[in-house]
Length: 118
Image 1 (cartoon, rainbow, N blue to C red):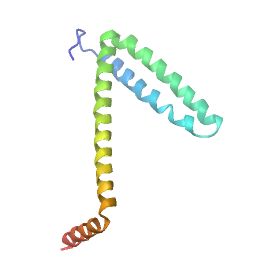
Image 2 (image 1 turned 45 degrees about the vertical axis):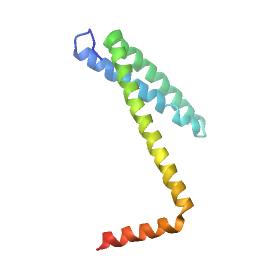
Image 3 (image 1 turned 30 degrees about the vertical axis):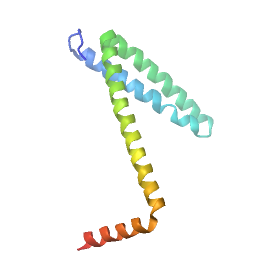
Image 4 (image 1 turned 120 degrees about the horizontal axis):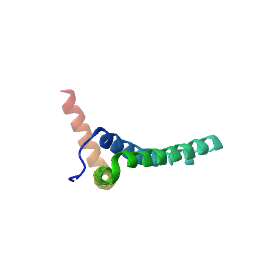
């Protein structure tokens, strides 16, 4: 993705702040699942801080920096989700194979283990 804006320290700092705010915003949701009001208060305060970081990042980087940051974040998110889906499918196929043929699978594991010891 090309930007029309010149790469400056303000742009880099702004983009880093925007991406950090995205990550903090998602992480702030985790404490909501824990019991206790202290966890919930900390989650809300982190979430508000992520918005302040986001707005400050946009002010520093400008609209082009915002577009660059969202593009990079979506690209990373897409790769990560794709990897999780792929490995989940592989695990399901492997588990189904083990359930259908448990004895064959056990023998194969024993053969692998004895080969490694030699």
